[in-house]
Length: 293
Image (cartoon, rainbow, N blue to C red; front, side, top):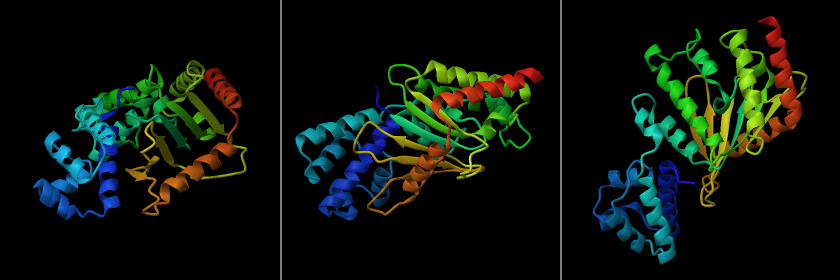
């Protein structure tokens, strides 16, 4: 698959920083050698800028990187120069969310937990619109069409040659909360069941039933992303009602939030029904709604 520019930029910055620290070279030495400002170098290591080709070649020599890895890093730089589809929405979303969309676009696997709503990657257009125009939504009317477009664009990774492996755990509340009314929910349940049936090899959804005696994060949403490159750690996106936070699994910094979310995901999955039982519950929920229409 074509490498996401956001993933390429992340891996390039991560590997350069790791190598610099491995050699014990201070940032001040790098800025002096490359004749760049400390602020500029900070932007490089924090993925806000991309070094020109000549500067990167000079840096690779300073960091004593062998020819094979130099070629890999130059290829990452070339991939990072691309413009992902999400970059056209810079006036709509903040930098952090746009970065997440770019990383999601290049993920190999995504594990999602959603307690009360349908997972974003499996929402039908009507359901998406209902969410965005609900009384508690804060989406300006002029932005609704574009935001719907973005959510549907994200779902393109479920099909095609480079399809993402998506595993999802949701609470049964998502099957009963009548976002937009019973008709909208009915059609969303049909859409969800069809998505599961259409993608048996890369979409695995499990439902935690109301009768489950275990609980985890009520009202929470989070995603765990893993990538093809073994150089990249697990990344987590944790959403709240107002904003999202991006975490990286970093053993050196003793970060535990990604590992905590990984544990919670596995806990949620252990409480959920099997794949076929979950699909049966979705379809029976749809049948009950249909009888009310």
